[in-house]
Length: 255
Image (tube, rainbow, N blue to C red; front, side):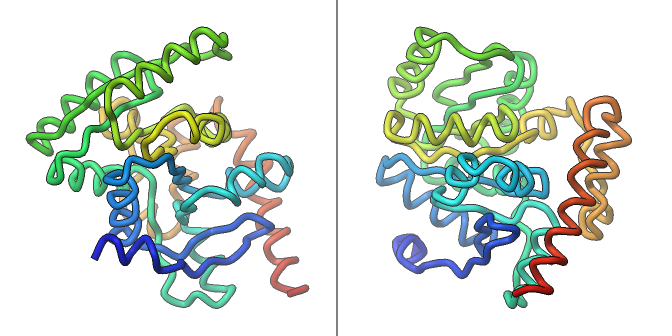
């Protein structure tokens, strides 16, 4: 079943020029597990409006995302975008929840996991959360890199540490677009499936509150996050959200 999942091409659409795959939690998890078992370097992006607009503003970044092995519709606006473009059964595949689905499968199938990103404290708390929720899960390596550009020596050391750990799945939580750029640069160096998971470490470790389910369903998760972190996020949302709506409506009217 899992090998079939990898071979079946996914339906996808380009939303303002960025590819978004019509997948599900089950399908995405099956693909990730299949790749992990094969010990091959793969990249998975969980896409939202912020990522779409980053690709729109930066063609090189668009190339990175559009050549990822899987791009899931993390945000509800992208689900609605897929539906408006003809994928009527499109569903959300949110990075933090995909993380849990993958970790559950990894624990069951004895696939070692590595963690890259966050703070030391959040990684410890996230590890404790996973061990409690999925007994038997193997956290082979966890790295909290500094919040600055790495030196070549640091980057090499971290890469070697991940490879030596034998991890077959690597959760990367250093924020968009940094994590997607990092995964692309390391895909040929690390024989593991890399998932860009954004704030999942902080959500599941309890360091940051996740939006209530009803706000996620109606597409207001951004508002909840803005209320929680106004100083960090106000510029992103007030700049990017209106532009996204304008550009997508323009795409619909001209397609």
